[in-house]
Length: 171
Image 1: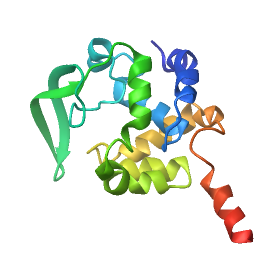
Image 2: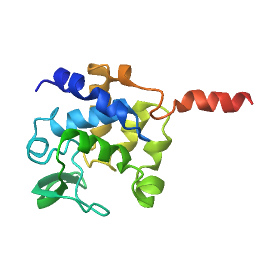
Image 3: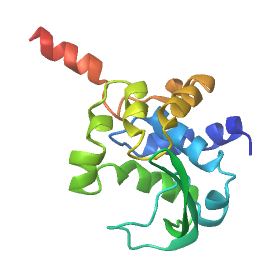
């Protein structure tokens, strides 16, 4: 599946599930993490986001190696457990809640991404936290720009915090 087809097939599903992380960043994550739905994990586990099966996950799992960057070195986590879904929509729905699914994720791990005021800042804040790739944020930003993903932003998704902050300053 081409990236363009993936976007056209799934952008409405991303818009359907609000999240603290913007539609454009979540779409970029899916494109990057799953090779636009064509990776082994996407095909066999319908996991578009490379989410491992850590607590509080109690659903199905898929086992495959994970490739991480630890202290600047590539490391293989043999037989890692990944979340498995019935379809891509279930993966998108779960991912929309992932960043706030535990107090640790909401208040510590993804706090900077949640508080970010732009998709670019969200992407940068996910680097080293959501993914160990030191270039993760840059890759997401490049995908957002290359495929003009900002056009899929919706009002009932993550609020435009820059506008909200300006309104607060004017009071």
